[in-house]
Length: 549
Image 1 (cartoon, rainbow, N blue to C red):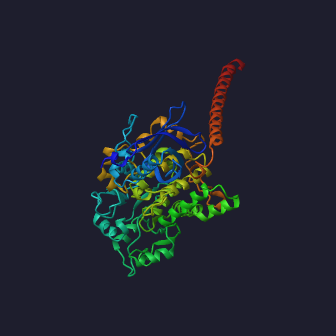
Image 2 (cartoon, rainbow, N blue to C red):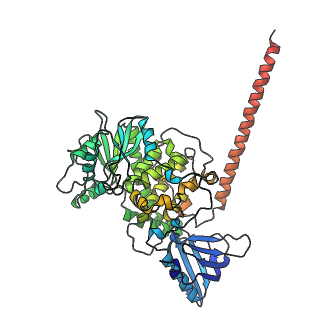
Image 3 (tube, one colour):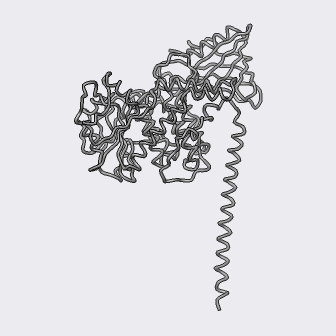
């Protein structure tokens, strides 16, 4: 298919662009296969380059011969285009709708994007399982790298290399996989070097109404326990939801078959509920016609902050079991690709200071989200404005980033990165020129040949000139476990995402700039103090021989 077939009117002059807190721009609107571009001849005017993939929905309005298109984006931006001529407006609108809803992954922009920067580091090699396993081997000899899934036949959503207990052979892994939803048998997520406890993740067991069991699965998770120790199974579903799953062939671990494990049920919402929560939240944030009480009521009705609280609470529980109780943990929900990954990755941020660095956080996303099989292509197909009927869309990754922001806000000196990095990940998960978030699992990315045909997001982010804007000026390495508060008054609305386009950030930007200047000035003064101390010590040393009788 040629993109030209979908573009009925490639160019219109005299278009007015309206954006929040920015002056109106008049210019020429151009449509290409992947971008909506508005350029102006006015001096010092910023051009608009908008990926069609970033467009969630559009609305058309007409007053006489003047047409208006309201473009609602997946990054929650809303812009207005005033287009002279009804026919031109209708043509532009239908072209945008067609180009922003292409189903074929291979027609997406990452396959056509050619970077203007030199690729110094290949981001596709950011996380290499063999290298990560060497670090694990230096701490323990109880694990091995298995190639049981090398052709993705045992579990389509798992990567080809998996870390499993050394005493469990591949045949047992295959039997355990047949007992878990989607073949997602328990694998290592995190090793806590302080006490040797581990966190594993999986999907629900397929016990069904007959109480089916699997000796290999029992042996697999028991292999992670030390002698005389008990473990915790954290099921991210309520007991009622888990009971209902049994009727559909799923279920949970029976105490009689897993006597060394205590099962704890939490209440993290399913993906379809989360999508509705996001829609209500964005609707509340965009509605400025109500009183404060009414606005707060709408905010509460969205249940977004309740979802943040429940996910953080569950992550804190997992971290507490590992660090304070000295117990190993298995985390799963239904599929093991959504709430499970939220919990395991947040628990690691709480426990492991390496995950609070830029590189460590990138590796965490690569390992616990991309390689662990979170279906980004499905979950991020639509955002809060889409008019289409939701299919598998859900803001699972955005909720994770929101939880990270909550911890970052409570521990502002413990993270090497600032919220700009989190916002950037949110934007690129929904629409990007890079191939990192395309596909739903490693198997799909291998089939699409993303590492050969597209550029990795990490190749761009890790360039020194880009890293600079993601650095937190308050950062002081903190090797301690950090325990975030989940009290309602401690959890705030993430204004950097949800109110970003609804109010000017000028004052906040100026405050951040001033903070950076103060920190730099403080460093200068500290260097002067150190220099004067050295000079004083040197003078005292020179004077002491003269004072000797």
